[in-house]
Image (cartoon, rainbow, N blue to C red; front, top):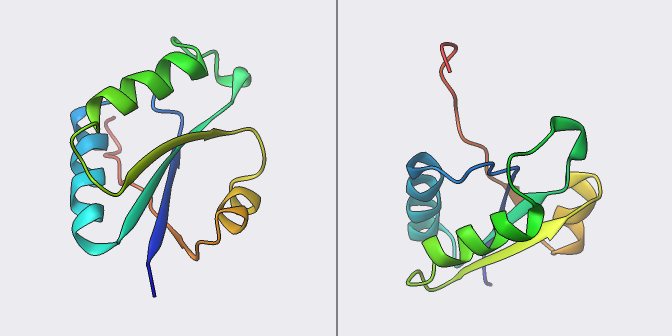
Length: 95
């Protein structure tokens, strides 16, 4: 059975930390869906389309990584993608 993980976030902007987590997750899971959230309430620096393109460019050589976007509750998106795994990065309090 294929394992699929969803890594949701705003990715505004995408960082080396995001890319590192995607690379490490890909070693564990068959497929990693990087899901860019529509969240206009946060006042993003880049549009959703730009963030998706940045992530596609950054992950272009990574097999098994899919970049998508969503504007629903993350739990609904994860279910729609038929995944039971959601990835989250850890941030420092000083961040």
